[in-house]
Length: 204
Image 1: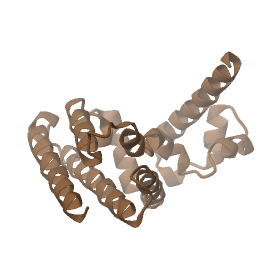
Image 2: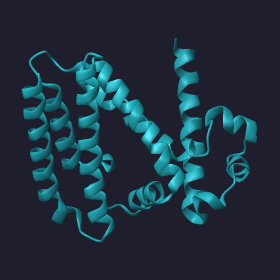
Image 3: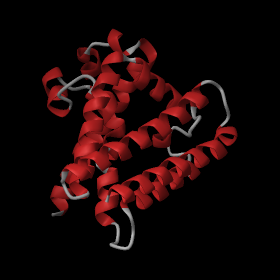
């Protein structure tokens, strides 16, 4: 088991290293200007090996947020029966705002801003993000029960998280300070999740 754990850690490290190298190149030259062969050469691996790890060029960038793909589903699955799914996800989002978690959009570190700019200004990356959102919705819907109502609820929850984070990022990218945005971000999250919880409770 220790050997398997070591193998998994090495594999994960390879993913992280290659993704970091790719993102640095994309930030320096532009996503479309860097061929996959250049990323492979910089990482010291062959192009076929790179494609074994990352089936598409866009995956080199989206790997950075891949861990969050099933995060909402995991949080809901781990919640107690006494906790509402929306309440759990609201608390998690508010905690993220308090920690300046980049996934909430409330982070002004230059590297984070550069990454989000790359992610949101490159058409093929924007398109690829929809696949990521669809998988997030599907995983959350399954955690909520897998019914049509669960799928509708999952779609609304993922949309709320995405829109809140996007609004925060846009304000930070426009030059506002994190501390000047935080109060509005918390208020908006509480309002949005509160409406969502009331709406889903009525539907239920």
